[in-house]
Image (cartoon, rainbow, N blue to C red; front, side):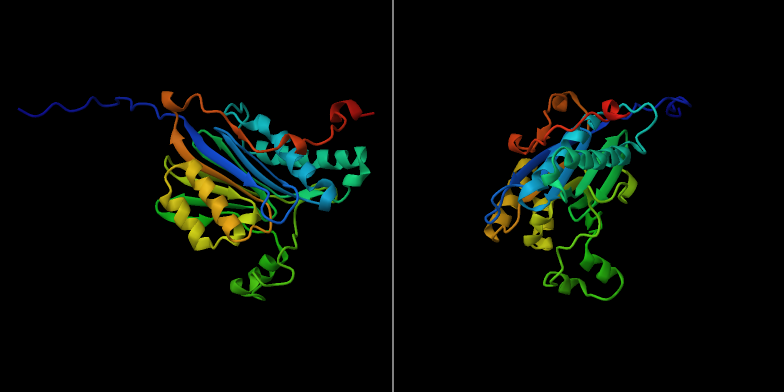
Length: 285
């Protein structure tokens, strides 16, 4: 007798929603007197921002930007999340200009932003500056972001070899950032498919003092995300840590009862909370 066949048209079990497991760590380093980095990690949103502007406003710029984006950490976007992340970053940029209007001493401040927003089984990516996003997927570790720096432009144009970039006198010159200079800065945007088990690393450029091969090895071999974040910070400190360093480790997982209560990680110190700008809705004539 033939074996019974499955019923035609039998529905497959529904896919479980995806969320991000995460760990975040930030350190002022061994040279700087304050931390201009800010970051956030949650079930659907992760952001790293590296502020600049001297002693006056780097911390304010990064903190303001991250705090403005935190409310995106959910997965309910009736009209889709395709433009939500980019729109919010542009709004954060406008708020930086408003903060300068409130306190002119902040003029010239700016910040990088590298962010991921998970919606369903799609990952929305936005980036400006030289903070970085790396992905480990199916055994391949690669940098997803492109540095918006002067030396990277020279490399892209074939005028500089990558190995020469580290010693170039203008290696820290940024070509694109958020701030009070450009009303509508150009962002790198992408929408990526996502698979359970893939890992992401978002980091400020302070991690660049650890060799890329070492960073890759740590992300591959350190299974616990918190231990991975801690080890990357320790390696940076061991290499002198002349800059602030911030890392956010992410792993895409299916949502289960075991991970429903995980709290978000906010590494915006209270001391970095920016002065309050006027409500844009109330400041209109």
